[in-house]
Amino acid sequence: MWADLLHRALTHLIHLEGMEVRYPDGTLHRYGPERPAPIAIAIHDPALLRRILTQPELALGEGYVDEGWTVERGTLADFFRVALRNQRAGHLPRVMRAWDLVLTPAQKFWRHNRLASARSNVAHHYDLSSALYDLFLDADRQYSCAYFPDEGMSLDAAQEAKKHHVARKLCLRPGMRVLDIGCGWGGMALTLAREYGCDVVGITLSTEQHRMATERAREAGLAGRIDIRLMDYRELTGHFDRIVSVGMFEHVGLPQYRTYFDTVRRLLAPDGVALVHTIGVMGKPQATGEWVRRYIFPGGYLPSLSEMVAAIEKADIPITDIEVLRDHYGHTLRRWADRFAAREDEARALYDERFVRMWRYYLESAGGSFFWGRNVVFQVQLEASKGQVPKVRDYLTRPDASPADGGG
Image (cartoon, rainbow, N blue to C red):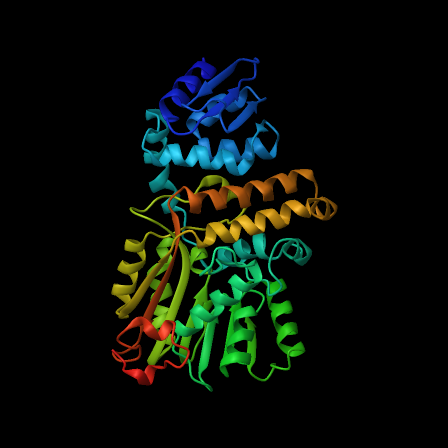
């Protein structure tokens, strides 16, 4: 019964490109117009048939990790391209649409991410062995979307471009006091201190990141300019000329959005500027995928622009600029996935085959969500009072531009 239902659902769903599916009983079905199809998969576990219909995102992730289904032709990236292109085309079967309507509000309800859970959620992901991240990140350990003015750029060059793109939006001057919320392994703090002459306070909930960022600042001779603290942003006091947050807002949780931006408002100096860089979703709000939430980023939630803006307006912080980075994270994840694939044997030595499959699935599915799904990156610039940011955006490309060129 479940095989027949899945067959009918896929017949309804796949109208672009094509996919071949071999069912547990050996039956082969071809879907879509292309022959041969660019992707062929085999479902080995009969229990997956029902779960793919009722919990597709979770079932596909768990099934791949447990080898309940495998890619027989093409690549995992090809699978996500075909699946997501067809999903976006609007032919989602009724049973899957109905499940999504039930799941979305339920998942939103649980995204509270209070202080205790926030710490454990961060530790779940960022306190993994530092050797794992060395397998696929750039030399500066930037674990966020790179910026690709040229798609042919190396990962290291694109991550450098990202840091300077963010720095220009902060309208920095030497001697400014900058807060980095979610400072990671300290790469942004090092750049702002070393190349822009700023004094930086970086905060993180990851003990591993705190240790490494502190060590990197000391080794760079910048311990006097960089202060890395192991703490939650809600516990911070004082004022800062500039606030930057790159790749942290995804962990805040929807019920905490107002608290987050109220805190930014409280910490920002009267003439301050802030820049929030976060993954988000195009269009209406949607639930974070259950597989990612359960296995990769517990407590995570990706905002729609409307959800962010509503919280910012309630906090009464003027928005001066919004940029939507579209394929940039897709290109970042493509490079991460390729690097990880080249060093999977080292990952197996650190963990095991099941972990390698999980991490591969995470990188490939995330990359597909930016190229073919609804995921984007928002960069939202804020100012505490009028006139802190130039009226026109050419200051982002003119190296000599500064706020003195005419605040807006």
